[in-house]
Amino acid sequence: MSTIKTEVRDGVCWLRLNRPERRNAWTAECGAAMTEALLRAEADPETRCVVVTGEGGAFCAGVDLRDGFERTPDGAPDLKGMHRRHFVPTILGLRTLPLPVITAVNGPAVGFGASLAMAGDFLVMAESATLRLAFVSLGLNPDSGGTHLLPRAVGRQRATEIAMLGEPVTAAKAVDWGIAHRAVPDACLEDAVAELAGRLAAGPTKAYAAIKRAFNSGEHPSLTEQLELEGELVHALATTADFQEGVGAFLERRPARFTGA
Image (cartoon, rainbow, N blue to C red; front, side):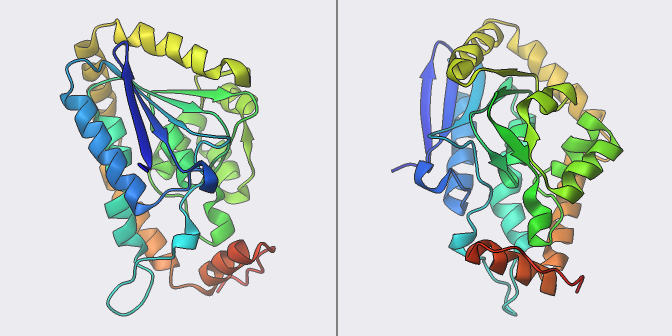
């Protein structure tokens, strides 16, 4: 079974994260499948807009920690390598795709899932959905573009609150703070997204591509530079006792006891 379900209709390519039994938690396989799907969408002359959403009751629960970590030659968690191989291509793919992208958040978007949601050009949320930059609960900094996209949407103070406290952001607050385009009743999410996607698919896609390129060029530091820095930071934090404690607490379903070491 594919980890990404693809359907093209009426000029819109729907990409659905397809691990509902794991709340669409992200894996290396998901990253490879999403990168391939985005390349196909860009090459398909019938595709004029892309929608990313989740199957089941969640958008994306973040990285699947139960898969474990790839390791460096010295045995340490290779978070920088994993970030570069499995997360960065998707985020850059969405941001540089010369087509409008809608992220339709149908349920919780946690950790990487929150960064993924913010990487779209339009973020539409079900009213019950939430965004949560939960990296801090593992003793990590946000990655996958979270430290680049969030402060630009909400300002430094609110971004600091979201990142350091790690609390869920409701759909209503996400709209109020400028993270999301709009929130709609849960039962109306797909119809509302389809309506917006149809409008975009009928529009001047070359102009949309130029707008995205110009906005990306105007951001300093660039998203590419920030993704590299994020990878270096999470890699360094992977050697800390707090990271080991955070992962252990998550897997054992208990509160973490951080010591600052």
